[in-house]
Structure formats: C-alpha cells, structure tokens
Length: 468
Image (cartoon, rainbow, N blue to C red; front, top):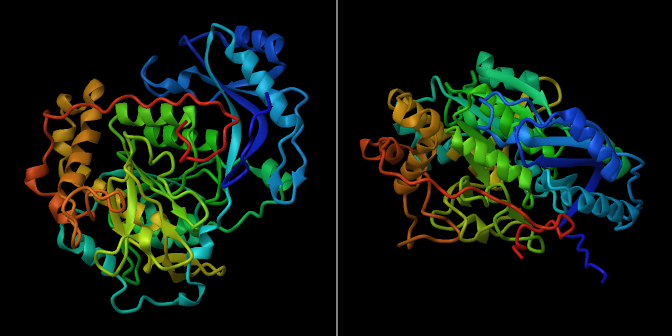
C-alpha cells in the first residue's frame, strides 16, 4: 500500500541521524551500539546529554542519537524535500530498530520547516532609533508597571534563534548567560538552500522578556537572569533534537521558567523533555503559533502539550483576538490555548548591524509569549521562600508549575464580551497585579497534569492539527 505523504504546511528534512529511546536505564552504550550496527546499519552512538539529575529522574538518559551509515539526502524539488530513497531508508531503519525488545521509541532526527516566514508579518517601515511615546502600552495592558517584583533571583530559559552579543549586553548586562549553540543545522541549510538569517527574532524576544536598557526600554522581568540557548538559525526551521536539548540545558542551569517562541509538530523527544521540565518544577511558556491563512491555524507543539502554557495574542484594539487580526499574519487558536498577551504593534529591539539597536513593531505569538513567561518569573520571585520548602521541592517540584499555572490562569483578565474560556484568548489576558496577589500563593491543593506521550508514525505530515 502506498502511503500518502503531505509536504505542506510543515516540511521535514532528514539529517541522517536517528534518536532512539531505550526501555531500561543505564544500558552499556558499547553493547547497544554493536546491536544497532547489526540491526540497522547505525554508527557513532552518543547520548543526547548526560543527566544532571539522579539516575532515573529524567527521561533523557535513555535517549541516544546514532548516524545512519550510507545515508544520503533526497533531491530537492523546487523548495520541497521530495519523498524518495531517504524517506524509505529511514522508514526501514526505524521499523527494524523498534522491533528490538530493548527499544521503546525510535524517531528520525528531522528539521521541521514551516512554509511561512514570520518576518512577513512585521511592519518593516516602523523601525525607530528611539522609543516613541506610548511604546510601553503592552506593559500598561498587562499591569506590569504596577508591580514591585522584577524577577530578581529567577533564571529564565530562553530558547530561540540566538542573540546579537552587543545588543544583548546593552539590554541585560551581566544578567545574560549565553548557553550552547544547538543549531547544528548547517548541513540541512546548505543542502536545501535555506538562508541563515540574523538573530533578529531571538534578540526581540529576549528584550521583551528581561531588558533593562539605558534608553528606558524594559522587559517584563528586568532583574531576572536569562540563559539564552540558540536552537535554530531561523524561527521557521526547528530541529527536534535541538529543542529537546535546549529544554534540558535550561533545566540543568536551574531555570524556573522557559520561554519558547517557536514550534512545530508532535515529537516523542519533545514530550519527554516537557515531562522532565514539569517534574523538576520548571514552567514552559510556548507560543501558540501563527498562520498566514493557508497554513495551520491550530496550536502547535510544544505549546499544545497540556503541561506547557500555550500563549495566544490579543491586539491593541481591546477585545480583538490576534487570530482575527487584519494583517498578513494572524495567531493560531483552539482548545489548547491557556492565556493571551498583547501583540502585534509591540516594540522590540533589533540589531542595526553596527552594534546599535533599532526598535521595530513585533508581531505574532512570539511577541506575546515572553510577556507571559516574564510574569511567571515575577510569580516565582514573589513566592521564592515558599517554593524552596520540601512541599514544593524534589519529588514535589511539579507543584510549582501547577501553582504558577493556577495563578496566571486564575488571575487572567477577561476581555470585553468574554464570559468564559475562549479558544482564541484562553482564559484571558495575563495580569501581573492579579497573578501576584496573595490569593494565588502556592498551595498543596493542586493535582498533577497527566504525563505527556507521543507515539505517531514519523512519516505523517508534520501538521500539528493532525491528531490521527
């Protein structure tokens, strides 16, 4: 039977590597490598990352990555990855790997490539060298300007397209911690002629999150520290292994919140990384995603996971969801949305190419997400002493996530005409004053969210709306 292969609206490019999850913890790599060489022609086995937690606490220690011997990428048909020998080769190897009793999961390392470029949703003519009056309307809307907390003592994980060091230093100073560059995408970029763009997206979201610049530009948590991890050369190009590694890096560094303004389709690797963050008390705030009318309008992963907080947008025109914005790019929506935050027309920093900065009107749920993550960081600062107790640490660390979610969602401000949950807005617009009220202090009266799990044929369309 011939399988139907969909190439849009998300494309996948195979890298010639396969991620494999063992059933048992601590299998000798040497023995596993020998077996995999015989089973599927695989070589150069390595772990995704050495666990910083005690053995058995995180799922990552059971994941390894191997090279497919003799693998060659498919030819390019126009801008698409044509289904051909590479697909059939990887399919065959994955099938053989999964047949071995010692293997729980096998997932090709792929690059998710969106067909729409978020840069198209920005107003290029709106760049400014100085901040205009009223630039902070989004802070007024979320009432960030009315709270005393600034995120001091909280580390935020920032997974994005990288940073411009000069601009980042101006915005954050010594509060910035530059993490690993997990892009590793040169092979795919070169083969499929995908341009490597400047890190305008990563700089913009970083500033919205935690800037405290001399010219007065401020993020939501201007005293928080930020670990910035580069997981992609472009917001429309995401390697499944890189995003998972980025989450684990942020966990190891001690992050309390992770902000992710990108996404794609379901991945077993991503599910395990999200589970580990949740179990360690780390809240993931992720963008619901954007569409151009013809691309998927549902919430993308990892925001689609229940353990993560899915962020949609609300426009400057009070009460109008970003999903109904009259522009080239609009926000995704659906039952997985939790909260919304202001976008578009929110100023964010952009490198000017000479070590300076321009301010440009940001757009998309990428702009909304760091605002929610920033308020989450303020909540973690507000209740730091309580969260350090045994009731919220160790095996109970997941309660931190549930309590923070409870505060953000419970205090969300309903929009005009909104009386209940709205798939376009979630439970309302994030409200810093409300979230930090004593009403939403940490409590033991929370229940855990079910464990995330993804098991779907890897060759399906990379469409987050396809749950079949």
